[in-house]
Image (cartoon, rainbow, N blue to C red):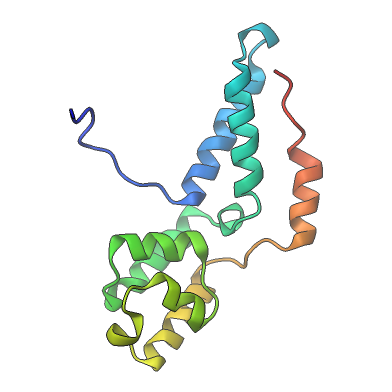
Length: 143
């Protein structure tokens, strides 16, 4: 196996959502005969999925602030990424994200983490917001 790009990194769902929205805009600006049908489908399906996740309401500033606030808890990069993507709002949800959570964190620390997450990340999109967003901007792209 050959390493093609050693500078690869993981993206949060929020970063991916912004990227997909940009690609969607540039794809829709192409003439109909220049569009790749499969790409249009992937863009549509990905944006439809991500708009129903916490990524739809997160901004770069929110994520940067959260990462700084999480530093004292010594979460791994993968755990931090999952916290951003899943936005746990209870101690139980947090335990599913943080490996060996009960051994590494006290109940007070778990409560602090949940509070930090809720203070730094906007709430998950509500079902009403999801429906409005779907009606406004997610009509199937013509390919």
